[in-house]
Amino acid sequence: NAGVMQNPRHLVRRRGQEARLRCSPMKGHSHVYWYRQLPEEGLKFMVYLQKENIIDESGMPKERFSAEFPKEGPSILRIQQVVRGDSAAYFCASSPDRRSGYTFGSGTRLTVV
Amino acid sequence: EDKVVQSPLSLVVHEGDTVTLNCSYEVTNFRSLLWYKQEKKAPTFLFMLTSSGIEKKSGRLSSILDKKELFSILNITATQTGDSAVYLCAVEPNNDMRFGAGTRLTVKP
Image (cartoon, rainbow over all chains, first blue to last red):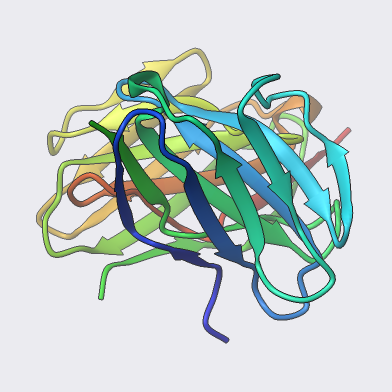
């Protein structure tokens, strides 16, 4: 069991480019959560997805950010037209259901230059 | 390979009990160790520890780090039902964060 896999580990983008962050949940986990951690701050919830459905996106910025979790393949967090303020570590977590604990990935560190 | 191991994985106690949660780690480079409480979605930050032997306290919660033995403990005294949550330990080796699997604490009335 490989755990929650996030890639890439580090991503550098120029302002205005698109960033795609991938998260493959643990085997058997159908719930995926994305978090953002800004420097000097704790984890901030962004979005909660189940297969093919967005359950809660209350933590997602209204513009430029989107997430999906297709029937096949990893969950994708997409940030369009990145700005410097998007620079952060983005963590994905998965769980088999809503009552179980989360398993976190190692994160993707996005740097916008 | 960096590793963060929490124990126990789950714990059931009664109100008023004292609990100790454990976190051991192996990382190539250590910056800090953090404890989070997670009740629903977003984990809530509890403590950041960087130095050995210095206890951090917040109300009924306290935590201490041992950098020689590579572990930390989180103590909760006089537990309440509101303490029921998953407690996450995370280690920052460089710019990344490695999380443990968490300890699910259930406090029964």
